[in-house]
Image (tube, rainbow, N blue to C red; front, side, top):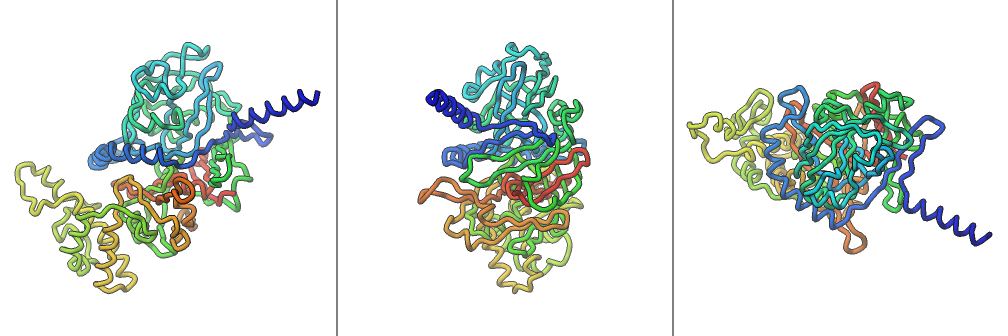
Length: 510
């Protein structure tokens, strides 16, 4: 009897090890989905660098031509098109069909569609390395067949829409429209630890205007409240990755009270954000306000190059030398300082034209004036951008009463720290104690991040490498300037997505 008891106990213990994703609906009416966590590793980092190189031209073209999403604003940019899931760390499990076919997905507040690999995916290697949805095995499948494609920063997934029941925790969402992916190109999906994406954004950015899973959870009366919340466990020594809670918040996941801010533009979970500070000192760029997106599908903190460069300089990160930046400082630095209090500085010295809201490269203007070829000196987008960044940096230094010589020296140092778009910056692991805190102002409250929280460690022991948790992406108006607050921020601050009141809340994570 004792032997049998030990056998049963051992079996149960193995079950807990093999099935770490726990779903439950507790007595408080909340539906909890356990999240699985993986560490950053060198293999995925190399793959991410490959993806970065392959996608750099695409991302540049998206930014240059302001690729539109499904939002009504004709000037909008599709943030989903710039996403790279290579560094994603947190995953959860769902089921599709009857009986449920299990898939590991990223719960992504930065997109709105649900997709998984299809059994009809024959020509993408990635599909053979992940579970595939088989419609013929489900008694609740409904054919749709409408074609679908989602463009990401390093490729696209494509396929067709189908309808079936989706199981999340103890809930069953009926007749959910989702994408069966039949093509998954690129390295990302080949080495990914996840099978698909479950978007938790608004329907405004849903491809095919499909009703998101979250909407149907609310509309079918499956939840106590139209609220969901994220708790990420940032303790690297613990197996538990965290929880996403549907129907409200778990008071054990946070400390103190949440600071709430309204959603300013539906589509992404976008809100207004104030100044960004380094060791309590303003960086200048967002002093008048910036927009931000809370995005659980992005690992890092993504922001304007102007500020990311200042951050790289402050933490000693190795970026990419920008010759255009150094040239602008050398040739126009003193002139910019002289005219710093005037408006349209960069247009006055001939590096940019001005469209009423922000500088536009004179080379762009020359495209409109196709046959005039009046642009002198080969001025480019890079020169215009470098000038505008230089103005912000110099203005900030002048407010601190720095001398002209000191300002030019400082700006040249910043040029050395310019990051590549959406690229990584390395930092010295031994220097964490001397790095500054970085703070974000949201809803009138300051949210601090320590070096231990914004620097990511890859590997262990002497072979360990450290990378900055900040990466650069310049989103043009009207959507930008924009910050994307990913897992680095959401791991430090418990995040509530209040769909009913269209607001987002942040509190210190427990």
